[in-house]
Each structure stands twice: as C-alpha cells, then as structure tokens.
Image 1 (tube, rainbow, N blue to C red):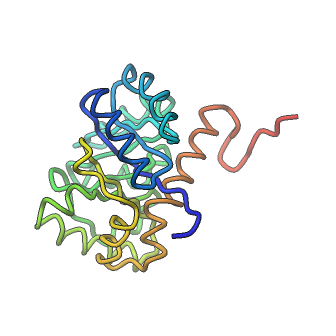
Image 2 (image 1 turned 60 degrees about the vertical axis):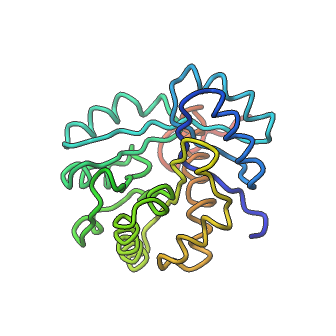
Length: 225
C-alpha cells in the first residue's frame, strides 16, 4: 500500500475514554488521521491524546437532513466551525441539494437514511459520496445497496469515501481490510485505496487551509512571505 496516508473519515466515540482507546487502535492499524464527530469540548481534549499516538485529529459535523432547507440552514451555520461537513440524507430532496452544494464535503448514504441513487442524482453530483463500513458489515440489505451505488459511482468516475463510522474499537478495521471490502463492491484496488486515503485527505487539507485563511477563494492560495 506504499506510502499512502490513511484516514478514517468518521468515528463517533461516546466519551473521552473510548475515544482514547480508538486513537490507540487507529494508530496500531496504520491510520495517520482521524475525523471525529464529537462535542467541541471533547475534541479539544482529544487533540493532545491523538498526537501522543501520532495521529492528526480533524473535526466533523454530520447534518441529518429531510428537506432542502435543512441542508442550507445547517451548512451555513456550521461550515466555518468544522474541518469536514457531511450531510446524512433522509430524503431524495435533501440528497439532491447536498450532492451539489459546494460547502458540503460528503453526502452520506446509510441504512438508517436515504440509500437510493439514480442517474439524475449522479448527473448533479459535485461532492464525494460517503459509505460506511459499519453498514457494510452489519446490514445485509445495505450491503447490497452499497454495491449498486458503487457501480454507478465507478461508471461515472465520481468521488467516493469509505469511512468506518465506528463508535468503539471493536468496530474499527485496518486500511487493507477496509479497502478490500470496497474493492469487492466493484472499485479497482487503487480507487479503493483512494477512498480511505487520497480523497478524504485532500478534502481535509483544503478545508484546513480555508479555515486558516491560506485559501482566499477556491483555487487562490495566500502566499506567505
């Protein structure tokens, strides 16, 4: 797997104690970065812990949306406070907005939400589609739907991210095991590795640069003298 930087783009620890265990586990598995959905107070406490394990920690807000308005209001509110913004779509209408809003990083298709994608949706897609390992290994119906989604993504050459969505160390898996699962869905091996390395890392680096003011606008970087 070469010198890739592996990213788990979504973990959901319920408290600091479990979060610390998950950081340790992620480091042992070979990850270099973790994207955490957690309260701000917990994120602040975790930064030092993550560094102890050689991990870069990023913050993530996950918006559950039923309507167009849900997406637009919450993205406007949260965009400048988190390293990554994901929209977990509960309806097709919400998905259509989230897939093309440039302030959204990923659109999450999960078993407990909206998990159908069609050609029209693919034609308006600008953002990465995020699928989760936890659904792949625990929900048989979701697993079948994921395969169909990945085939459509692959045929259109769209961007995909595969995150664990783990809430404890038992649900975490290593990069090789994770990439093999999405490879089995139909992506070639290189793109399967990209889904847990290059694609999420590029999003995080770009967003950090925006939050720090290094990117003035899309494609325009501030040169520091």
